[in-house]
Length: 83
Image 1 (tube, helix red, strand yellow):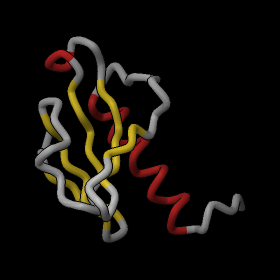
Image 2 (cartoon, one colour):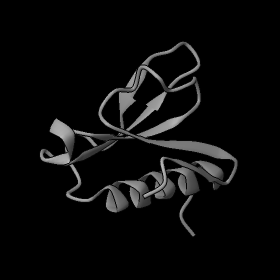
Image 3 (cartoon, one colour):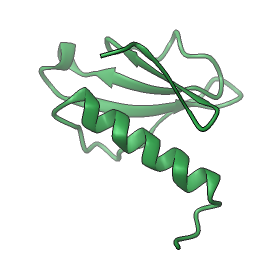
């Protein structure tokens, strides 16, 4: 899997478990316990605060976490309104 992704102008970084290298505004797909504990989706805000976006629900595969991040970006792009 690629480490860097761009979706609708937003950066998504797949990383081995640390959000410290993310730039403000980036999303991260983070390995938990090297991936053995699953994968988490985070966002680093403009002030450097990191928020976990999947409410402690961890994904088994990084591809699933990446798909979830893209769904969140879709919701942000549409203003959160459902079609």
